Amino acid sequence: MADTNSIEASAERYYEVTRADLPLSCPTPAMKLWNSHPRVYLPIESTGRAQCPYCSAVYVLVDARVADT
Image 1: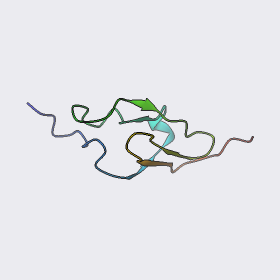
Image 2: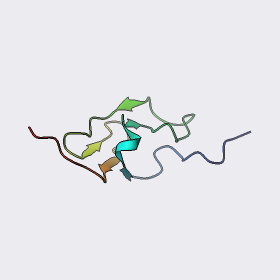
Image 3: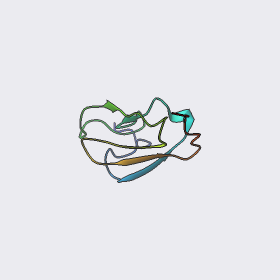
């Protein structure tokens, strides 16, 4: 039986995430994986923004405290 609580992978192009969601991967653990690209981990901590190289989904860290460089 399918998990009805899962998010469809790559269904959106913009996602807001929090520090509780880190480490960030696309697709995220909450997404259905059967029809998605390989999971990749995205570095979002330093800039507060990341884009998936496979599906071009944009992730924004909403409680971003950008690290000093």
